[in-house]
Structure formats: C-alpha cells, structure tokens
Image (tube, rainbow, N blue to C red; front, side):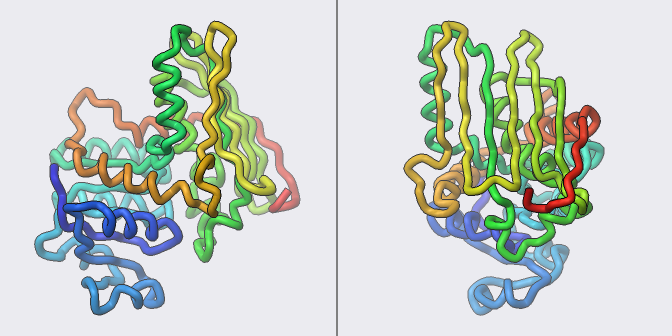
Length: 311
C-alpha cells in the first residue's frame, strides 16, 4: 500500500502531530479533515474539505487512507465504517474500547483485505530504537524489563476532557497509556500474559495509577508502571540482562520541550503506515494484542480507590 491522499478524523490534542508529519513527509497530502467542533475546523477551511461527520469524509473522492484520532469510545465505529469503505486505517491506540470490538475490527480488516494499523508512537522513539540495538548486540539475553509511563494527565490533554471520563476513555491510565507500554514490552519480549495487576482509581472511577506484572512463555518477566497523577513526566525502559547488566532508555531524553519527542515519533508512524498490508489469517495484530492485555489487566486487578482525583 502506498497511500497519498489522507483524511484526518478527529482534531484533538494528538492531531497536530499527524498533521505535522503529513506536511513533513514526501508523498503524503492532507485531503480532508473531520471534527464536530467548528472551532477545530476553522484553521483548515479554505485549505481542505472540512466535515463535521466522518461518513462525509469517507465519501471524499480520491481518498487513499484515514487517520482516526477521535476519543477512544468512538474508535470502533469509525474504523468499522472506514474498513467497509475499503480505506486503510491508522487508528490511535487503543484500537477499540473493548477486546471484543478489537477482534471484530481485525476480522473485518481481513475480510476486506484492508490495512488496520494501530499507532504505537513510542516504538518509533529514537532512544527506544537505540536500546533495541544495544540489547540485540549484547551477548546476554533479557531477564526482565520495566516500562514506566508516568505523567499528570491534566497537563497533557488540553481540552480533551474525555480522557477523564471512564466510559469514553475505557477506564483511565490502563486503557489509554497501557497499550503503548504493553507494546513496548512486546517489542522486547514478544507475546506476554498478565500475571498480576494493581489499579488505583479516583472517586469518579478513573484509573490514576497501576502496576501490571507480565510474563513471557519462557519465564522472562516485565513490570509496567502507569501513573496519571505523577508530578512531572517520566517515560523510560529498564532492561536487565541475564549477565546482571542493566540497559536503560529515557524516551524523553534529547527532547526537553513539552511533548517534543512526539514530533519524530509520529513521523515514524506514517512511514510505517505507508508500508502497511492487510492482516493475514495467521498474523498477530499488535493493536489487538495490546487491547487483550488491557482487558486481562482489568480482569486480574486488585483495586484501590482514593477520594482524590489528583492523588
């Protein structure tokens, strides 16, 4: 697949990184945008077709692919419509709100022979890729790893308050940041299962912190630490090798500005999306795999409830 004309559905906080990558990368052209809010469409009027409903965007002539960057609860319905229209889909993580929806979408993509690509931006982080090279070059295999994904969510969402609504987000930090962290674990260990999960929620029912234990079939382990009440931001990976050495990647290193690392990561997303193929019958769908780990975390969880939303 070599898409050229792409539509962006959803113009919230994350869309700026897609729009910048589309503008930066040769061969991509922004063909249309969609958002129900007129204020979000205003900067694009006079430049590209603007729509308040996704069905109108999907009907645009000559469209080659779409980005779906809407609130989590709307991912499944819009991806479903795009796949039925035969349009390759790049969807923000999580693939869907529930694992059952993710399985349905994966089956639909296979049936329509259409790419369905979940955007895990951290796998394109330059420090993550350096760590992968270092670990591959080391003589000792991995014993365990830890992924930390810590931030104060209110500082990151702008006007996208749906993140704090468990019904629209899917839960909280486990549903939204969990897929990125789980995908990073899978980049190093391959398939894993949830062994334990501790989740702290606020009075509104939103996940604010979580510690998830994971295990690969060969016994290697991983820990994912998530926090939406952290004072500041820390996103890193620690890999322990069987010879006792420790390797580390700080995903924010060399990108000191607020969310500065996302600019190069979203370029990586669109580069990879350009080469995406329809899922085969035996393929492991990365978006679905991460979603299944989210579901397993909620099934396994030990819950702590706090009255304070910001800890």
